[in-house]
Length: 124
Image 1 (tube, rainbow, N blue to C red):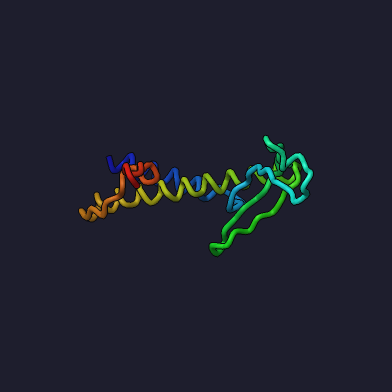
Image 2: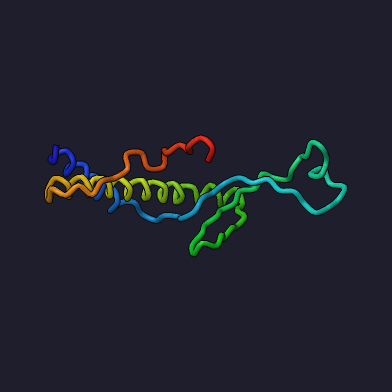
């Protein structure tokens, strides 16, 4: 079992070494409502403006949002996908490391089985 874990550890570390440039945050399409009173975005049902591609990042807990052109959005998507992959690899590296530490040192530090997949309890 340790051999398979160590093999995967080396694969993860190798992929991390080749990840390249990453763009933190996310790129998403947004629609907006303007301030003009007679505009179609204020009708019922509303026909909002957009969609506009935006990049949002929270470097210090405060959101930074930039509107992108279609060209900028297409050019930045590979960097955003690289960032998503980086986060996946780091999470896998952490899980593998905890398992390898458990085997090598006989110390079970534990790890929640389905982090991020938790369901809210009824009434909460």
